[in-house]
Length: 474
Image 1 (tube, rainbow, N blue to C red):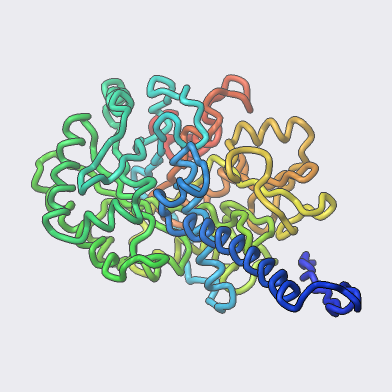
Image 2 (spheres, rainbow, N blue to C red):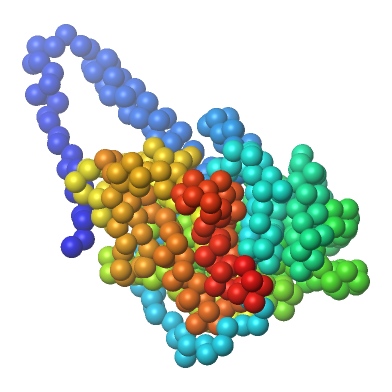
């Protein structure tokens, strides 16, 4: 049964019922007071809309004046989740075909499947700063992508932690098959980063030269382009073209470098963003693979105040219309239908959850009314080991049979997440569908300090590695 949110009915009273007949207020005062109240309400509404719009567009300079957000990467991840929510808002009445022809199951997995692991720099989203390169386990990743560098004045800026890149690259001494890369993205990728850089061939050349220099300096194997998202939410329409030009020119420079550099792109999962942001066949010509950001499908926003699953493998019967397309299975095959070869698609799996604050503790299912982020985590993002702690403290865990994804609730707290069972199901689906592999976001939010399972670090990533990389004896 669908949980419906009652729409509050406004109760109106005649002005005469609240103002005595013999009131001494003058006509001017009586007219001015309501106007002042209405004006004040408009100001409040304007500030709120401004904040919401900034979160969607990523205007980091402006948001810094409105909200105090110390963690830039938390804000960047929040902005992506809000842009995904915006795609649902704008298309909620669009009746899209929620089924795609996936073809027959693949009999054989792609050769040498990838396990691509994002590793975020210290003081970025949901990290304590204690996870250093020496704490990583290179055996459970084929690629480690360090993020996130910025694009500043058309130059790739690695940030203030060069020792991190050096430490990750040093892992290749003992594990020479490991590939290490740098990801360009972050807080300025909508306004002053990628959009400014891609406008001219000269700027793009400056950027590409800086990428060649940085990858050589830190002995890295390539670049991951994490532009979220060309031409989306007020972006210039030509950004879609510029994006392809950047990839084409970078591919040419990489091939000429003689270093066998890898070029990947982190790309959106919702079909509405895919349609607006990407020329898929042309992208496929130039990238080695894409990292499909198949998570953040449901996130608390004021205009969609209901609980939802972070990364459902399949749709839930409660989903209808466009919402029925917001799942991993649909997104991956939508990229295939647009022209991306399966062998170039690496499917994203999150190691964090999304929290909601229930409006009514007794109504705790999917699409239950919510009134904000949960208390766990930061701005609705919760690390896997914090979710484990919540379950140990008495949280009630539910596995949704339709989406093949769990959630947990307790009191007003409600969290959607992936556990070892749901991750395993996604891995089996990746293999049977013939995709190239799995991407993890991120190593930092997995249980790297063996809080959930004694003497077992990175349990979610390890499930993926154990089933995709058996030949490496993990």
